[in-house]
Length: 133
Length: 133
Image 1: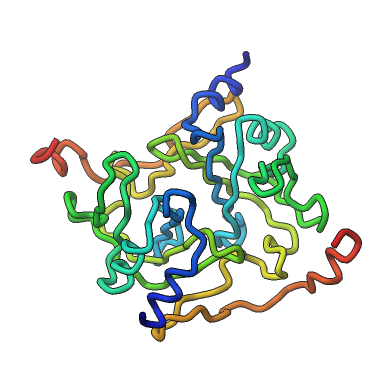
Image 2: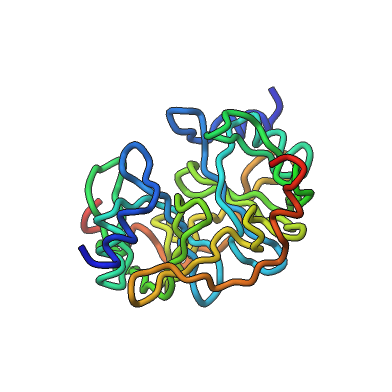
């Protein structure tokens, strides 16, 4: 087992073998998404330089951007003090959110207790995902 | 039930009633930590303007900074597209990490597959936590 494999194995995964991964765009410094990896997808992320996740709803591996082309080029990988959360700095191509926004966090809580959209769409999801949805 | 309570109730919590919360320092834009809230602690966070979490290991509520004084003043609260992850922008007083670093993400993966510390300590944990540890 390589040093990298040992390092990845030694992280604290949850009871399903998953670890939450925050992705920050390296240029804008914005948090663009949060998703889950297991040891295999984290290793694949390091080896390929593109983020690979484990989908809890679809129970399968997915590379970010495999459908949309909006991939993430990994720049830096950080671990937190408890070794149970990963932070990745990446170059986000086009946009991270499948709803067409640069960041998945495009809604802010207002004083009246509702969500308001505070960002502009950068692409039309019906164009990007039309072949498979 | 108020509009705010309805909004908070309608988020997607996991099977333990928890939702992951990413905290970004509003001044430096750095991700400083990730922890979990339930509906009650999120409501308390909105009402008090200070972040309140649910500790999975201690099974109790805690206000960030209750021991250290390193509280977080909430500036903005965002929700992601799937309504299952919260992002909070806050003014981080002193530092977020109990190990003495501004951010909990102070270790970066090197090319040789090991973690290296890439940040400077801003306080000595043995001073800050000496009364209770």
